[in-house]
Length: 486
Image (tube, rainbow, N blue to C red; front, side, top):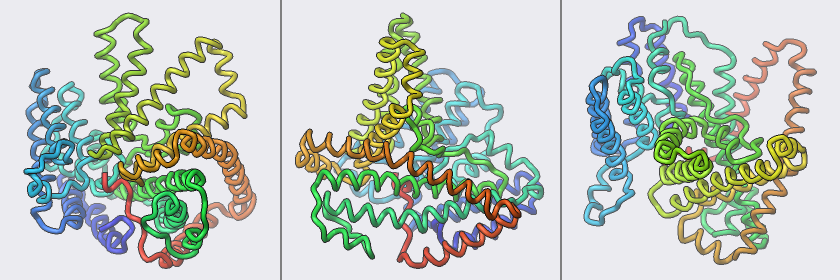
């Protein structure tokens, strides 16, 4: 039952009706849990597929109960290691051929995001930051919350619990919730499939595989060089992933708001970022925030206590950045291509931090700040940041062997040519898109919205819904959510 299917919205209406008229918190928890179980069960072919998820949840709650209020550092550390170790086993980071039949006996769908919620509860309990221990009912309602089950956003238990305790009959609907939902559907059902077909047309020249359909198929008849194909395919995939993932997030946030539950934002105009650090404060925000809180900051604190000398601070920052992003890369998957992805992300973050330190030392803070605000320099940095992420994402659409073969075929010169082509093109195209969007917003403000903003909003919602129904029907099926497989 995907978040874009008609059956999901029938299911949602029924759940909302039951939830809105439930006055007791325990009943709301039961309704949310029942909805979670129905939603999650729709992805399993048989009950046996779910045993890995069930066992992971049992382990998580046992660890939470054993650390809450009576923990020692050794017990707390053992629980974290046990949870992460079991996750590594289930996700096949360490694969044993003799266990092939074991690996085929279950599904790990949703486990990657459940890991963050379970670890957050256990760590907060171990550090005495959790005021009260969640009941088994509250734990399952939170960990399996169905709008965020597949791909986040990663939300905090305290916020979720407070929202459930609020008066559900007072949860109001507003245009913003419906606008967010329709925006998400528009991205996922219309914009993402169009960009996906253009990407497949370009990727066909990189590594012939899935052939695009419709008009985009015509582009496969033309010969283009491998460098140009990569310079087209990588940015197109990046835009496709953004539309797919941010569209899913819009739907998840809107659906949660119907229950009065505010999920955190996951995207904030990421392609306006002018450096790696800013990019990760705008892309998959809940993930980067989680890693900053529970991985990066603790590592910095630990290393700083081991090496308290002030001269070691830059090295500690660079090292912890690299390790944090390496773990982020590995979280995406257990194959070698995700190890490379993590190394690439970590190296870029470490290089950016080193560059900042060197430039600050060479120019001084004020001159470096002035340089950063220079329009040409800023847009080139923006293009460089986009190129960095677009090339990193080749790990999402090529496997390890294909990636090696591509780099051998391109050579260093071809790799650099593709990278800097993307960089320069993005430096020109992204500001142009910004200008066009500002112009469109201005025209909307001066036009329909100037007469009756409420009526204009309603008209836009109706028009958007009709476009989704009409144009969405032109595609045989919407692309699946990319992050669902991680």
